[in-house]
Image 1 (spheres, rainbow, N blue to C red):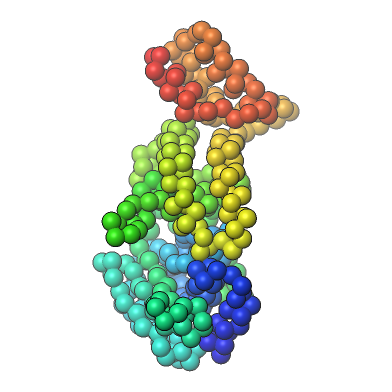
Image 2 (cartoon, rainbow, N blue to C red):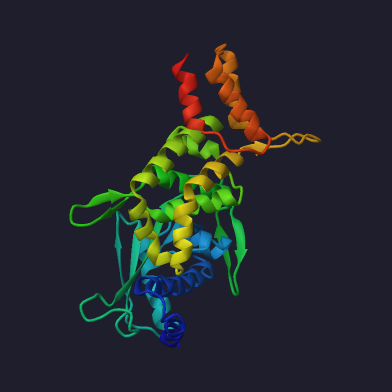
Length: 335
């Protein structure tokens, strides 16, 4: 039954690229794994996070490949590995699974030798499909989960502001290693997810960001994120595309994301700080308020500062987003 379902999935999507087919298969395996975890008395308090959580719990429009979980009270990783193996053998009648624990007892890698049998790999490629579970102690102070109902179980997932906080942390701190030279590149999926969060108007938890990144204020967050995101996206655009290919079926959708990323990021990343006062049509913004305050505090004047104020006023009335980094750097350089 288990293998037959996987065969049906492959036959349905056979036209897709092999790397995308592998991602589809991984998502199917991940569903089985999550069902075991969240119907288990021992493991059902684990907190789901990461890109796979966004896909399964919040309908992120891309596939994913691993399971990221946090615990509040410690969990025996080796026991979970053994229990997952027994689940596949006893409940799903699949005996070929095997697994290992690595990364200082934080990562379970489940190994399924199914790709050749399903026609997704050839004789020169590995037949093993890997699914990793990364399990760590939570770093968040707020651990109240969202309860996400599935067909036969309930997932405990972090709410979107905390998931966005984790994504921002990932953008600032993690890279992907590729090639024999072990070259460090960004993960394109992080930038895809970032734009998705912004389109939904989600704001990260700045108190949680302060603990790891020492970012405390809206303006500081915006400046740091702009510098990191825009410079990295421009420098590693091709690497970002290659990282996303296994997770997005439609090449046209991927091309559209790449082409629209910078203008959308600049617009949306500023708009998440917007708020409206009752009975007023003019747009107010904590970032632009901070820039105006800097100009006033330093008693700065002249045509350049008037231009910045005019750009802010135009934006607030619905016009073009301002370049926050350039404005901030110009203001502070004149202090």
